[in-house]
Length: 327
Image 1: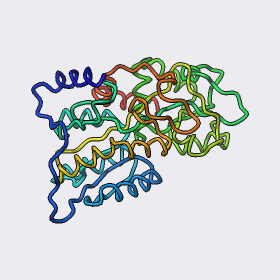
Image 2 (image 1 turned 30 degrees about the vertical axis):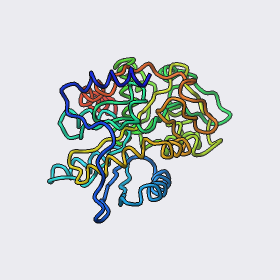
Image 3 (image 1 turned 30 degrees about the horizontal axis):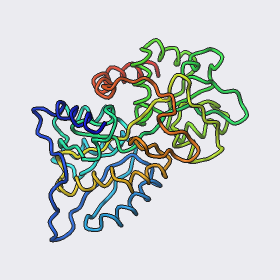
């Protein structure tokens, strides 16, 4: 399996200068600083920071945490102003990484461990270090839909919400999946049925618990963070997998150290922490978070391998259509 993936990457990377394999050693005179800009939750940042400080003591790792759109906006502003200090970007909007790749703003690098990933999760410039799942949450003790498609049924009118796709990378990725799989008519049907798009996944869970909107399109991670807070429904028409990409921007002032951090995040100890943090690891054979099945036992939305590229190229049009729905 690894051989076939290696052959795929050789073909994919043909004509593109990509650094593959262990990076060079970081200079020993002083610790290089690697800034990580990430959208994982602060609680998870704290755990990864503690592990990295133990396992990479010769690298000074600094963190900026925010929502995917906030991270992207900060990085874009810094880049436009002359350069960002970020050496690792780790958010939840794969389409942004495609856009950065198209603009030549990501360092081509494939971590050796990434060769073990399924084809959909690795590219010449970024690879998934975790997989979030967008599922359905519902108020305890109340009826619940079994499919995302059910949310367009009048039986569920005015009962459901999602995060704001303009500020939540996981929500935008999910709406991009709905758009690619079902088209504009489905988005319009959701809107007609009272779809509320507001806040992040935590806000969706709060609305479920309060009964304001007892059904939600929400991340599995948020539901697992508060056990018993709501019903977890793995949709029969497929949970939406939201990969969390890692990438090294070309602005990075310490690329060799950044590659070491990248490789560390793909390694066994960091991947075990991914699972402990209630996310699925993208690597085959890794255990699932406590209380949920592994990825290969969950029905996933049938997204194409080039989903992220399609999402990136259709993003401006999709955002315009969503703005029109919100009016």
